[in-house]
Image (cartoon, rainbow, N blue to C red; front, side):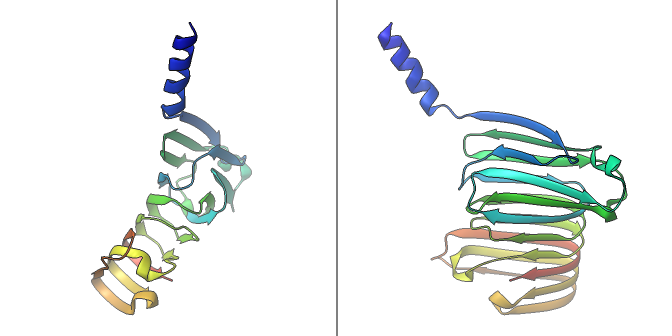
Length: 199
């Protein structure tokens, strides 16, 4: 019996822990997530700030310029397993102009972010960044540009301002890419219409 219990303890110790958590935007949302993990974020239209901090959690707070009742119709879902997780923010009014989402993540995170519309800022996050926004202004805090093994940035219409990479382009169908064999991370940023700023 002792051998069986020991075996089960070992299995539980190495097995990934899965977490499914749901909430609504009218209350602060928080769930555990390890530093260094891969986090996929899918956000409904609205302004979004993603910020890294010295935490082992994902925390979401929401505000709106419309009625508080609308916040209750915006749902938050998180599914995590091992070193990866998916955060989804969806629902609510089709008028995205008044919605604002603040998402706090571990400072060391590998991000995959998708949103259709709204202004987005991503700062204080160290790791891979794969970020696409259809319409709005996108700002990304890069940190040390030498940390990136591969960078590719593109937009269909607007401006690319990337002083950290000595790039400044405006107009239609603008892009740039570069490689650095000594880098650790990758950066992919795509915007259909708006201003894309790397700092």
